[in-house]
Amino acid sequence: MAAAAANAPLVRLTNVSKHFGEGETRVDALRDVSIDVYPGEVVALLGPSGSGKTTLLNVIGCILDPSAGSMELDGERVLDNGRWLRSNLRQLRLDKIGFIFQFHNLIPFLDATDNVALVLQLAGRNAGAARSRAVELLDYLEVGHRKGSMPAQLSGGEAQRVAIARALANQPRIILADEPTAALDSKRAGIVMDLLRKVAVEHDAAIIAVTHDEKIFDRFDKIFGLRDGMLDDTGIDRRPANAIAPETA
Ligand SMILES: Nc1ncnc2c1ncn2[C@@H]1O[C@H](COP(=O)(O)OP(=O)(O)OP(=O)(O)O)[C@@H](O)[C@H]1O
Ligand SMILES: [Mg+2]
Image 1 (cartoon, rainbow, N blue to C red):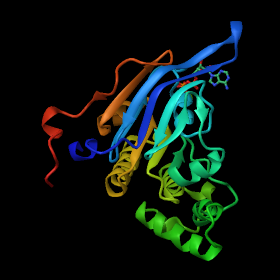
Image 2: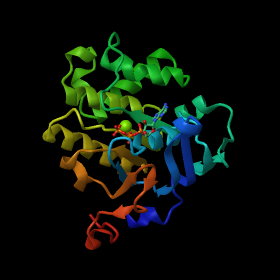
Image 3: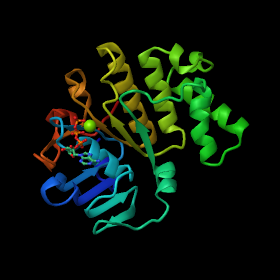
């Protein structure tokens, strides 16, 4: 993805810090984190428990208020010196960001189609248009044959693919995933990673995934290591040197 790297980053964090509490109970969950993620990239956040991975994902997802730093998402400066520049963060999230969680978090009393259609309706589509777009997305994620199933009837891999369809519904270019494959066996983890790669390539999206999952380390373009809230390296590029040349296939 050398060509993509010439573009502007989709996610740029500059010296972002986040602490919880004050005084003796203060926890510095992120310290001066700076990262760039480019369109088409699939990157991992890796680090021990408590190192700040989920905190970082939640800051990028505009779910958690950072204490300091700046952030640009999809070319828009959204955070400056620890202050949000937008009052409507919910709209920002709906427009720009898709979330995928370790456990799919599907709504148990809605079928697969309606789980996806719901976020489309939240973004303003009418019910009929939302449902037909939802079915298209389920087909794209190769789970269209389960469109009428309830979450409890789906296998782990199928439920995760429905959850990815939901994350993609509003065509966000930034996809954040917290341990997306941890609950899956290696075959299904591989399928999910292949689909995330397809999304990154076909939609020029950036995928940022927290993972401990050694089965899928080789699926990432870069791995950002976190330790005690600090990056231990600024984006180790995991691709072999000969893979960084522009792709011709
Ligand atoms: N809401 C909160 N209030 C206080 N401390 C918090 C809060 N959320 C996280 N922390 C602390 O911030 C640090 C980073 O937590 P975080 O959840 O980001 O870790 P993590 O790397 O995702 O860990 P894990 O691999 O266990 O999920 C930890 O010390 C945690 O206890
Ligand atoms: Mg976590």
